[in-house]
Amino acid sequence: MFSAEFLQTDLYNWVVLPLLIYVGRMSDVTLATLRNIFIARGIRKIVPVIGFFEVLIWLLAVSSIIKNLNNFMCYIAFAGGYSTGILLGVSIEKRLALGTQLIRIITNKQSQKLIEALRASNLGVTELDAIGSQGPVKILLVVAKRKDIGKVLSLVNELHGSSFFTIEDILTAEQGIFPMKTGESRLQYLRRIFPAFKAGR
Image 1 (cartoon, one colour):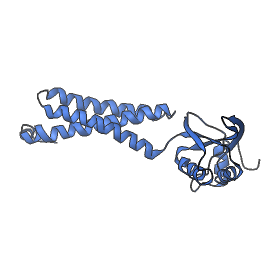
Image 2: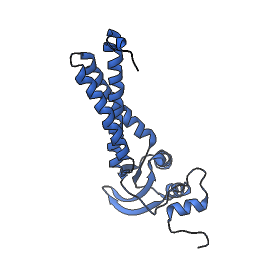
Image 3: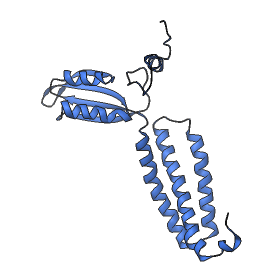
Image 4: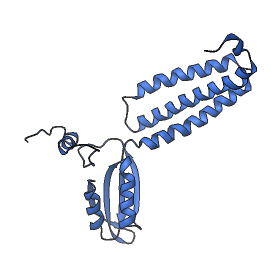
């Protein structure tokens, strides 16, 4: 890829090599961050593939460091790539919005309009009666895909702006009510939600 003469130049030793180490370290830490997040969210099928490329890139980066122990720019590039990789991995995972979350809404107001609005958006809602510090309250439990959390919070803020709510991750959620995917037919939706569903039943 590079000529033997170029590998001996200051440009390669102080610019190109550190840049390659930076990119390599950034890539392997990004993969490591995604791998850990996928494991935590129960998405395990792709983890071995990510782990393979993560370790391969790490070995290449470390071997370059070992061959150039006197080059302090390689150390800076290695550390910089690590920091950037963490930030990039978290940003990618946030954009992918994988997983399912539980929104717990606690309100002392009439909740029927909010329930109807959530159900009109094809979101399942479970309503519970409870007692808060200041009297009776309603607890609404909504399980939704992470990509739909913004829609849920928008409805909550619009109809119950002062309501207390919490959001937490769910490792597994099945047989619930979830919005149809873009371009998905009603039959495909039923088959996804109810695996045993067949036409004619």
